[in-house]
Amino acid sequence: MIIFHITLTNWRNFKEVEVPLNDRILVVGPNAGGKSNFLEPVQNLLRRRDRNAKTTI
Image 1 (cartoon, rainbow, N blue to C red):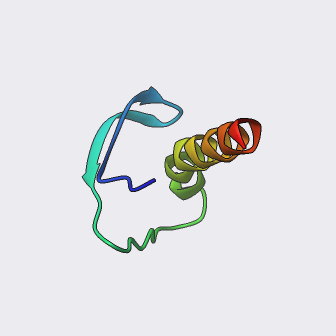
Image 2 (image 1 turned 60 degrees about the horizontal axis):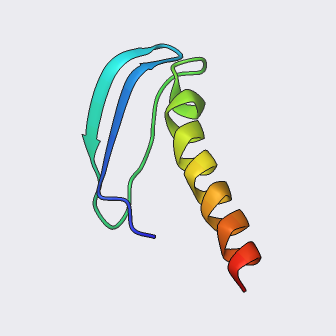
């Protein structure tokens, strides 16, 4: 799975954010700045993909 773009709307501390992604991204910010809140949807997508891959084999 390749993710090219992330849009978050009304997710935790983000009212709306759009981020185009390249081969690599670096998420930097202060403590409690929302880095984990930004990455959590990506983790959820990858977990869902892994679960689906295991059930289709």
